[in-house]
Image (tube, rainbow, N blue to C red; front, side, top):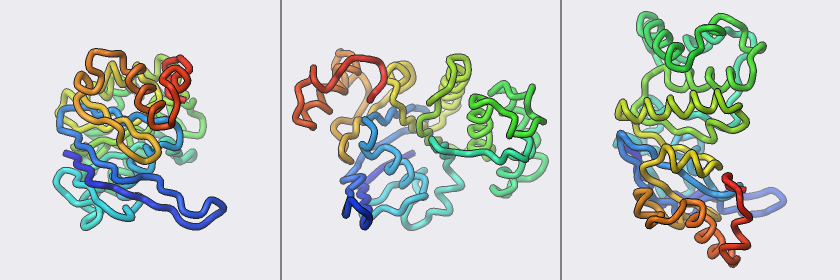
Length: 257
């Protein structure tokens, strides 16, 4: 459902001059599976996801999303993808129901379908209690649920989530994790970028480890780890790519620094 083909993104200008944010990124993500995209801050995860979502145009290379080329036909890709950004905001003067309906109309959905999908999503994400409140009164967890709801209102076959559980309390994070499992069970293709290695071990079928804009390893999780803990494999690969020992790169902990 997603095939990244040598994606490269170069940002030019500014104090740092030329910055290569993604350097020949290639991987595949299949329907009914979750791919975990792992890397430290600045590794190129968000840039890669934004190219998949057609927010950024690749400097070179391309990707297919549900068989559609992101460079040649970005509009058709947007109809087939749900993209949740780590910096997604909400319209504070809209209720949750109004905002989800607004995005449904942007996707040219009928009012009947919007109403039906809204009921399904609000039940799935446990949003009924605040469905008709102004979003400006929401907690961070409620805002994240609303962001997910508007992302999936058109029921896209491909879901791309950038740090969906960041800064959420454990109960809301669990709801998001349950939703990702539900999406996988429905045959969706899910790409999940996260710092939390335990989430990848719990959710992902496949993994791609990115560092300095390059993919260091990718494939089914058992093949990439080879029976070792994902944390050990991750820090070993990133440490070697950084010219550090595995011990010096790791530093302990569950989350990627």
